[in-house]
Image 1 (spheres, rainbow, N blue to C red):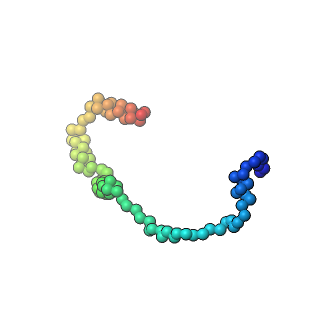
Image 2: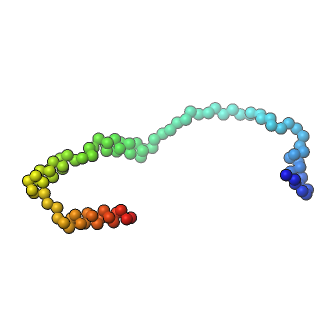
Length: 95
């Protein structure tokens, strides 16, 4: 690379006499140990997640109750309820 013209700052950097590349260490800073802390909100979240893990995925009492109603012929769902649920599900998927 060639630099044309009068650039005293550039020439001054490259034409300086003296040692280069030497490093002197003035102050030594002791490094601290890495630490982490969990916020109060995160702790509450952990407690909630533990509680949710203990809740079963299937509500067996509800399943047994509906099964008994089906066996006795007492379980009835209206066509309007089914249609409403289908429409709600389809609208949620489009959004």
